Image (cartoon, rainbow, N blue to C red; front, side):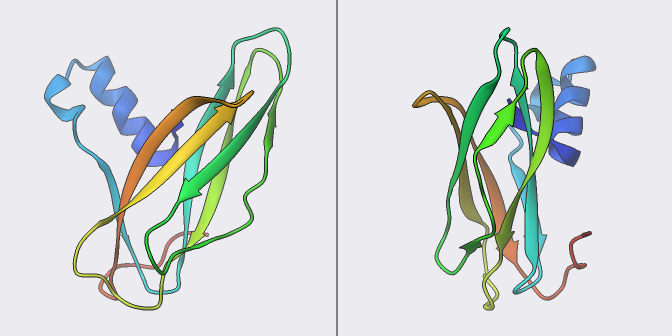
Length: 127
């Protein structure tokens, strides 16, 4: 379990090339006001049975959740899902933390954070 997309790629790249000093870098991004930020999650299931995972987020003030639903992961497989979040209308002067949690059977199987800043001076997110 972990972040997908660019964040997942670079984390895998750093590990593959023994760049341990980079493993402490946090996932961060800047988005435009009212833009939708989609956080990619890689969800894996190593068991012989399908698993139903609950994805939840804890958002900073002003952020809103898009449609987040439970995810069914087939046995012995990995899928990537996107968590849509809507940035506030107001710009922020610093990065704020978005907490991402994934639960299986009531137990945490992933907990991570993305740090986001709202600014008019960045490109719109790819849809």
